[in-house]
Amino acid sequence: MNSNSVVTVTLNPALDMTGTMGTLKAGFVNLIDSSNLNPGGKGVNVAKVLAELGAKVTVTGFLGAENQDPFAHLFELLGVNDKFIRVEGASRINVKLVEDTGRVTDLNFPGVTVDDDSLQTFENTLLELAESNDLFVIAGSLPVGVTPEHLHGWISALREKGKKVFFDSSNAALVEGLKASPWLVKPNDEELSQWAGRELSDYQSLLDAGSALADTGIQNVVISRGADGVLWCSDGEWFASKPPKMEVVSTVGAGDTLVAGMCWAELNQWTKEESLSFATALSALAVTQINVGVSDIHQVTAIQNEIRVESLSANNQAGVER
Image (tube, rainbow, N blue to C red; front, side, top):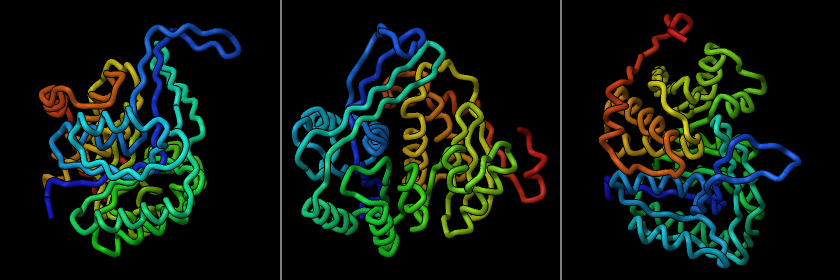
């Protein structure tokens, strides 16, 4: 086993078209100030960050054959091992409109349709990769043809082989995937509210719901709260971090960057405090840029030095600083 290796799974990748603008006016012609088109999808974003940090990354999932070139080019640039299954059609295009205020409007288009043969090929590839990798990141939405039940089965199969699965998704895929008890999950407060079946409007309700989720057999529950920081329940113990105030350019990919940071920390076997401060700093830096990635690790270290990680014991959870 390569201790520095990780597999990222992106079942529904996308070409992300990001445009910056003043204020979005629905129903009118809007002029875009600047734009770019990048291969994306949550797992691809995680792979990019991990590769730039120095991990040995393998990427897999389903790619539309018609517009695979930008993805293949990125994978070559990053030096990652491309194990994507090519399927008929084109991968989806996601349009992200970033306003001056930092507000982001997502327009997510439909993607490819995955047939049974491609499903079987992917499953064989995943199990083959499990022979030489211990860490897997499964992130993002599902294309047509891939059901939440498929996802549950794949997470369960990896877990039975003793693999650590980092899982980040939403909606039905999130709910079903959580039932397979992945090693780490990263819901935001909205996604955790969806799982809990009620709005989690305050700090204590997030801790209570996170603890309930951990009690289902998930070792690590990481709750991302944007500028309010991160809550992490690890083997029953809670930790909290808060980033310094950042100049927000775009929040696109910040959650994926947080997942990558937690994964990199696990690869390096860091302490809980070091792991959370690094992942929080990495995610904080991500909001200051349009594209996902780590261009200067020294910037991350500088932010990390400003972050304090608190251990929240059971008797002081309710009284901790908000």
